Length: 316
Picture 1 (spheres, rainbow, N blue to C red):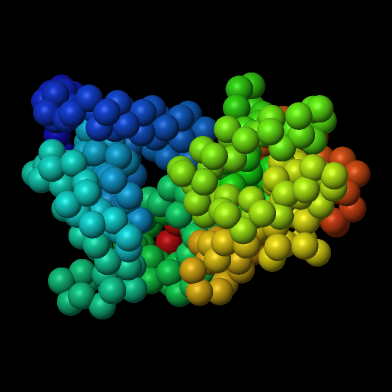
Picture 2: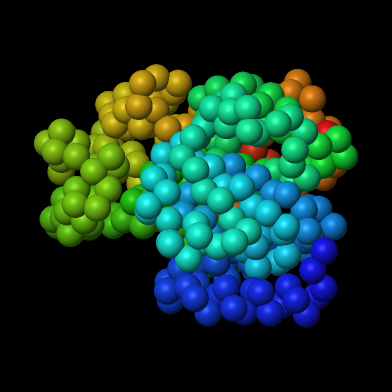
């Protein structure tokens, strides 16, 4: 195992090779892992000199972070991202390998033997997996006895859990904040939100499209998709009109093109247990938004409605 000074030197040399935005991302990811350590959900003995699987690694920010913190080897896999999209300096670091494949394909490769990883890691991934039981079973098979799995799960039942981030996103002081314009309360009506809608059409076409644009009616704001999407927990309270208001396939549930499985935090825990994992530590990150009225009438607990992400430390 490398000494503390060796790890520090390796990290400094590696970070110095990264382009500015990539370096900032990796340094931010290091701070996130340090936060998980402070919350008791991660400890250096889980990764120092150990073999780490970064599942659905994206552009490899956390892979680089684990490498900087002293992991012996980081194996990064992702179902969607082409390795060529990952910074050359990350995918070619001597302790990091990167492949495009699912966890099911990964375990089918004879080169990836069972019980071969000390630590599994996934960040805001499990809410997007349609076959989560199958994925957890595959992950459990590659984890060494006594190894750990750190999973950060993004909760669908929070104010921005639908990933409709053109309308709702994390703000300051623990609040999830509205990103649009309250045109329904202004004399200009639709004109007041025209620039915001135009940005969504260009930058987030899955969030706002020409069909939704045509449904606008300044004389009937309460049934306008823009209004309904702009309400706290709008993806929950519009359930009876969901297919009209959230019409992109990515918002649907377990259908072709859908991107969210919409599991509750209890369901995630149940699936973890059924796959063979043992819960070691669980932490809820909560927003300061207060649900009221129609939201509470849905029968979902206030605890679930205000949980933004959950951190699960699991063991085999």
